[in-house]
Image 1: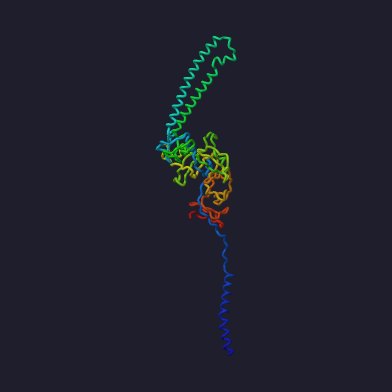
Image 2: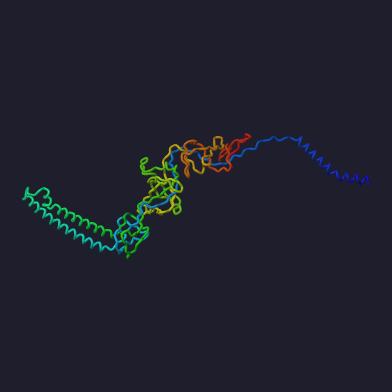
Length: 407
């Protein structure tokens, strides 16, 4: 029984003894083996693209939005009453009218009769004036024959001065009535007051109108206005007419919703409206675009602007000397630019732009010509991190070894 117990214990503890012996052997080997020297991890240089900076003269370009509106718009009304008997073929919505071209005609017969009547009144007044002038001659001769018999107070009556004044007044009134009748006759033909396009047609042939009856709404075609909204701070960069010997800043007007990229119409700044937009508290600038509907032969290839459309504008403002122009894409956190220094390390530099536009930033101080601007995106930029450019050398690593170029 004792022998069997010893045999069982020996089988149970034998594997444990072997395992403990193995652990001891490994510990001895690790403790007495050669130790590898510890090395700092080599820093990996980030591959980037760079571009050299240049100091140059640049023009401020202000991007904004605006609304097209008519420079001239008028609601034409009848000035005399009557029946519309004739309309122009161009008198329809979208029809083009030249200045002085007739829109419609009101029945002129009543006014022709009035002119003839007033002409008769004038003829009678002229005859009466001639008769009175004859009476004046007779009265003057009689007065001369009487000599000192007539008092000075009665001389005016003897010479028929009141009668002459009455006849002259009647003559002038007759002529005034004739001119009024002729004017009313002229007003039976309604004409375009300027080069225009018919926006609304409000009457048709056969309609009976009275003075002040609306006839049409006309929009001028020689020019249109664009009301542009700008941040108040940008207003100082806009050239107003007369400043620096110009007619105002040149403006490029784009209708992005309709036109292709790169297509624009040229305009000029007319001036500031002198008040802020009620909603956005933005400055309001008025821009004029000539021939917006491209009606002139020299503008036949140009695209037409649409009244009331929302357009983008680029105002070419004041020029700035000795600045570095940086694409807005390469400005980070509003005012930081990434540079690659002479040791091929990243430098994050904060600058104060002279002007920051939508596409470009103009920097007068803080950047030098020849410095290398990093144009690649870095997901986690850290000041001093090593950089490399394609085809160039890697920066020296922490172990003192210099790598080779390439990806």
